[in-house]
Length: 296
Ligand code: SPD
Image (cartoon, rainbow, N blue to C red; front, side):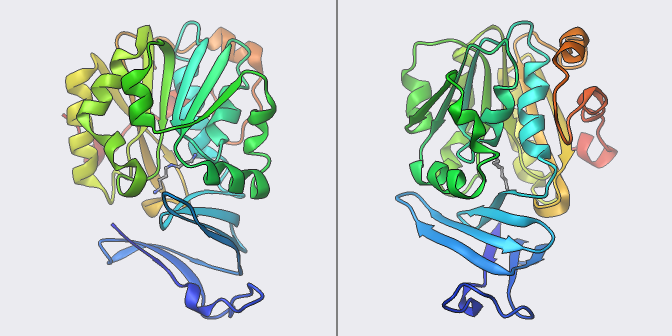
């Protein structure tokens, strides 16, 4: 995967030459996503990665980590809603939730829309990502004001290795398998995550683009289905990720996202969302033939 940020054309006041400045995120340097940049708002180098916030006409403000787009103002919040609500409505009593990564806090904010959740721990390695998100995406970080949010700045791998706690739902809200998150896509890590789940426990992980990242997707699902008795892929439309088509792994010891969806709780909660609903919950598990063929 190759990314390219054309910052050379940003002038000192942050304004871009409107005709020349584009953000490109390329797969193998060949094809991918290209978006016109209006303005570079902020660029920081944290201890772990480069963090950019750019402004664009179509998508509003966008957060870029290590050269990959993460979130933006106008993507219908599809990724954050799908990574949070699908496991939470599939678990009979999601009280203890853990998010590994998730620095923009969008998933945390969605998780805390569920009154059953007693605590949501978020273990993010890079404090700077949370600080930048608080400044530029306050609607995503709103969950931090909830007393049930337990924010830790720590290495997710180390946390999983050392914790004695058991969680009902663990969400791996990671950036791509390059850079600071690379180790968190390994089978050994997934095995340890499985050990931190209660009996009804569910792990959900972001598993990249089934169009561009075919070999990554195949090997991830091969590993995940070796570890978890139930392992299913679901997908969402994400216009700012390469191919606009993104996948997640739903992994559990016994909860089935299609048989165990809690319609009654869904009806009672009257969630305010832009993308997730009960039809999408079921529909997101329907996969095209070329994607089914990537799975074991
Ligand atoms: N290629 C982009 C993959 C990004 C996955 N994580 C996004 C984090 C949003 N909370």
